[in-house]
Image (cartoon, rainbow, N blue to C red; front, side, top):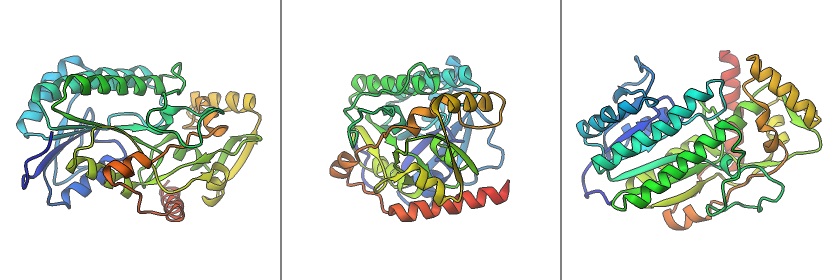
Length: 328
């Protein structure tokens, strides 16, 4: 649904502690197109954010739907950005399932009752899955083939399906699903970023798949385009080009440790279980096969193209990694 001209956009970010929330908020606050900015999350915000409204909601609790509705009404929210999704597997799978599925159900119901103007869901190109028969560039119409036996992927695929059904049942609301490739930013928590940011990076011997990255600033630009324009549907959001994963590891100054796949799975599984590594064994296919997404559709329809070159993205990836390493 189009927004009225000359009216400031009131936006709510559900998932106020997601890695994209802070740069998004900073972008909205510096843009005169936006009015109220509201962050919603299950954690207490404390003094983390200034200049915005913050609301604590237990997204895993179905009874909180009424509270979500009240927030949307109180702040006269036009656009809801749904980013309350884990960016890497965690050991709290059941709670994450409740937040990502039940939380999505509650949010969608509240959005329908409020009759918001737009819903923008943050998703991931990881959901295409890494397979040897993937096309060279994966379009938005390609099926989501990530391993549904892995809760991390299954919950997000289910959430996408819920949002697609919501769009069909609420034609007056502009619904957009943005599938981002790994986002490079100071707070980046994507599983691929976490993997290659270790000093010693286990990889699969004999494989070196290409990886896409998009800069955090370009990700914020994409959200801004969809907040201010009407582009319903599903869109891949990617940066320029791609780089072999072992090259990315080398650029960071880290060391790739090639392992046979069974050894990798045993080692990664054990280290993840005992809190020695943030990367579980389920990442193995992404170290073997490509999952490169095609950004043609969003360029053609919404006019979005990344502004950062691949070199600039990799330079910032290195800079952000050094900063985090020093802060440890």
